[in-house]
Image 1 (cartoon, one colour):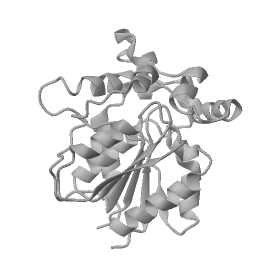
Image 2 (spheres, one colour):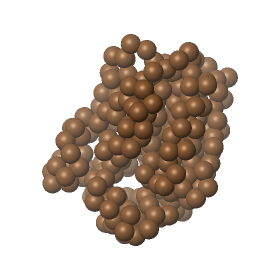
Image 3 (tube, one colour):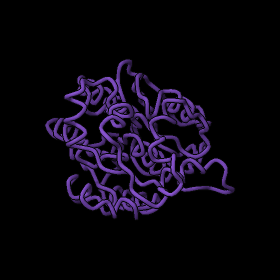
Image 4 (cartoon, helix red, strand yellow):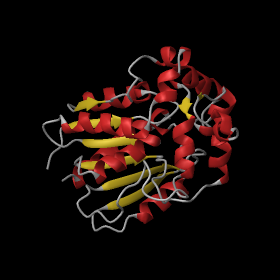
Length: 264
């Protein structure tokens, strides 16, 4: 099938603004491109930094429900491309029978993936170090952002991106993800790894990603035992903020080509 719409799903510590270059790039190729915000995130970065209360309140079910409503309203199944936590939401939407194909860039893990590299623990430590933060929105300093998001960028470029994109993240959701593998029953980020009706899925890893290293996506991909297509590709030299790193155009084109070739 031919998909004419692309839905870009952002992750934590950023807003849809982080997709600004990809959105324009795909629109110039003739695609309809949507980059929906999480509920309450429809305002600008500056407003969320001034008042992060919408971040502290939002939940995974609310985010997924909103994204699902956006996708179901489309006349034809779109290509879903999610970054970081957006990769988790992409997997959940695919599991619900939505999307023609999915791409998860530097994806956070869905429930059951227990790989936790040291660089990931160091990246999330500012949020998880204090249980009292659990119901707050916690941001990064620029130094913490540079380690987690832009470790392969120059310092001036990293700082400019921090000022343009960075917002706090929900500590409640991050704690929930951390505890998902020890709580009984299905949690918010559960997917059915045996679902043969799920659309094809490509995991993409930045080889130098500290926040969500390639081992996380590799383990996530290996959890899928269904007959549908699941692939994993690593781009050496790329950090977590892959959508903004020099050379992103090639990755944007390659993942879309893959998605269109495998779309159903």
